[in-house]
Image (tube, rainbow, N blue to C red; front, side, top):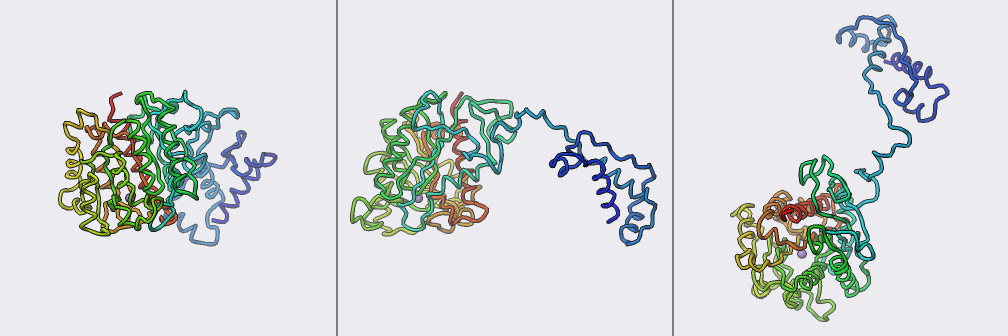
Length: 438
Ligand SMILES: [Mn+2]
């Protein structure tokens, strides 16, 4: 064995003299003038015979035998033809899975808040780095960052980018007509929730007011939380934009319609708005429809069971509990949600919002979240339910969505919670992009 390496080294020294550092490092792969050493042709030995040779310290066969091994080895090494030194066609677009400027799924980034009004936006991905509305574990302010990092293996076509083979939406030779962009994060003040949430409100507003889509008259926004409080600002914007209440499909292990007096005491108005009460306020402000909203995946204990259940129903919510999946299955849940979009909703075009608290998943699939509850859905079940909404009346009227409560400090080294969130956004995009006729 040592003898073989000696021959390789000697051959290397022969052609490396005077070449560049890279050529020396990569040897014959980059050395254009490399001439393969002219070894003598001999008959190849069988494996058993060569095993004998390698298992012995002493050389039993003629030099030509070892030279033949080297010659055959060199033959099997790939030859690389490099592009012209001024050719950047393979590096000009950021397609790197583990480097580069990070946007969700390599989507183009534009500043959606200032200027760029001429840039069309059909679907905007935007981060809401905010976690000072939580009752338990913080960290969701880093959610958008983690979701983008974990989405590096996804890629989408946009009006400015051709579809690659990794695209999961359509065949590789098709281009859709939507402009999908990553707006970056809304800068949210970490010292005062009122200011931070108002900033998010204005951020959403700037996206939908200042841009038009190629397909949608008004951009759809998918928000990456952030704790669940941020959903209230999205609902407020949609209510103002559509001038009517929004039907909410809320995936969560918690009801989040808690009366502030039950969750936190409601001592001041300021403390009353948090990630467990925002749907109470969405109802109180009239942002959401007064019946036909849905919670899916509920399993967390209530604070005051009788009161909380009554109050939740008053806020217009029906409940599909996590355990329903054992009784009616994924298809049963899809059916119930799809049928909740009534003929009247179809006639009125009731706008639908989907909010996904990642804690709807079992902690086995999403440990990196603020308030884990055991007994949740698997990632596959959640994605199957979301995918089941495609091409339905409900799906076609989804005007906004979010995924919230991803808290990277509590995630695994592999980032499975953030990874689940990337897939949720992927499913939401599929609903928004595929359901509408081009
Ligand atoms: Mn929640």
